[in-house]
Amino acid sequence: MKVKLPRYEYINLDSGWCTECDEYGRWAARDDLFPNGFRALSDYLKQNGHKLGVYLLPGIRQDAVDKRCRIKGTNHTVDELVQLRKEGCGFAGTTFMPDAHNELAMAYYQSIADLLHEYGVSYVKLDAVGPGGGNEYYPYQAPDNRACTVMLYNALNKYGIWVEISWYIDHSYADEWAQISNGARIYVDIESYSTRTMTSTHRVMQRITPCEKWAQKCVVGSDYGFYIDLDVVLVGMTVNGKCVDGLDNDEVRQTYISFWAMVSSVFCIGSDPRTIPDKYLSWYNHKEILDIHQSGIMAKPIGSGDVWQNRKQVWWKKLKDGRIYACLINAHTYIFMLGFSHEVSIQFEDIGLKRAYIKDVWTGKDLGLFEDRYSIVLRAAQSQLLQIIPA
Image (cartoon, rainbow, N blue to C red):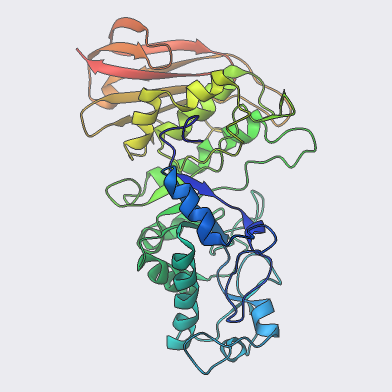
């Protein structure tokens, strides 16, 4: 992976890495998958310059409660923490909420962090956090487990372990989330859960709308150590020699990468890089795209960022070194089909300019000097990522 994607840092495992708790009720790596131990895996990744990430749920594991596991370093058992048996997260039947978030609960969470540190883990995706969860029609169905999240974050932060919370996290608590995590999945899964393809053009376009509310918050970006996550990037996912990403064309694929870069979303590739075609690997490694992404600055919309109210999306940001970028997007898509072409424009006065030179970032082509505005006709789901140079 270091050869294919040299600037990508973490390799994260989803929920299957653990199926049962250990004797202390903690998340434990599966012996059948990792016969040499989990530390051997993280040490191997470290040799290649990578860091290991894992998946957890907030709350007290229900299997640990059933077994009345002892909390490491104490004479107490985990069932003492959950006499009320309240659901602990957005996945019913997996964890319990502590009746009180006291020193004993903290001892349990700290023991989990201690074990993950022994494993060499550097990243944790904390799923089913609330207020959040649900779906696009009935959002925020997960119980409010912020107190659990705080405890886990504090325990993991002791070892410098990055914590991302998921999914469809309620933006109303953005100020608080930025204090108790490093990133937040802000919408539902991007996967279409089809038997043939991984996602769709429409599901990509849907990600734009929730970004508007987060862009209005002053807690997102590298200055705050907190980032949004639009879910995995599936461009070029190939299985048995066939592309299964489900996207309509390469214009959509470039829009996908461009928008994630513009909002500096957590950028996680959901495919085996060994099977991704070289063309798409070159996109993932595009130096200027990565610079835009790694700036850690979240772009803001000009006009409405809601794709249902405004099909002609314009997002822009200014990097700390003074470079200005804008992404013009025709977001006219439907669930099962693409929409119509539209002329999309950026008015320079909206970004404090009168005249500007324009460069197409993907092609590197200088487009010329423009007065007052720049516009282009884009097909449905097509975009143009621009560098705007004041004249």
